[in-house]
Length: 363
Image 1 (cartoon, rainbow, N blue to C red):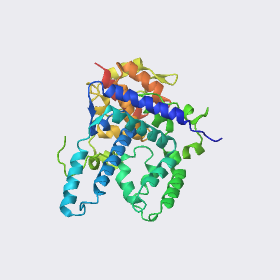
Image 2: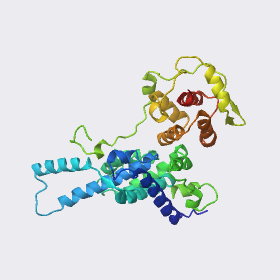
Image 3: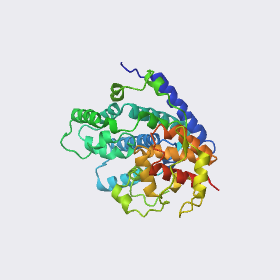
């Protein structure tokens, strides 16, 4: 079956999504800064694609200056002064709603393309790269790729492909075939958009069932660097690093299985059991989940419960933080994560996760 992309649905979805975000953000402010944009939505990929587009516009501005034929931009003093000017300019990002909204629409469409068709997306990125600087382009842009980065990052710093765009494209397609079963679920990636507006994958792909394999193919400390140089890459600690990390979470002791009934967690029974526990670290409230996890906890939850997807974990924590009670939080876990992600209710990672949620909401 050939999958047909519904471009009208995509255009409307991106427009609605951008309008909702801007309505919320610009209620009490006139401008957004670079740091505002990095945390603008629950989808890290959408945010970073907005930043990526600003980076491209920043570079275009520099090329406009250098294209002036009347001045010597190769002069050392001019080059240094221009570099300093552009770096200072990058730290003065100031975007009004009328300019941010189309950037958001563009970022949402690109994120959806990346989630549903990573091969086409990354091959398109190769088309955007200067013909003799493909590797340099990938190194410069890798910080902006938060979804399916495994499809492309293996090429970075590889010299065997020379500078042939076709060789890069073939390598991307071949690598995808090898690793596609290890990639994050399309539904789970798109679920991170749902905090703003639910995305209907069936309407987008115009099929009744899930997409086939063929469709999936189809202010500052210093101003010596630019804002874009300092956009942080999200890197997960290695297992060795986590082992060295001093464990600050509550230890997992021999405890009864997590209370559940009919495939669902029972909030009342979980509360009763946890209330009776007295081991160190169990008692005491914690702050917001999205801010309170120790590094070893975050690594474990991401790896064991959220398919290695930090974006999905962050979205889950922020969603649970909006709950008004432990019972409501457990209901969210039952509906969105327990079955969808195939959690084992009696596993240590689930036990630890529920401990943290319990401490978040229990008086």
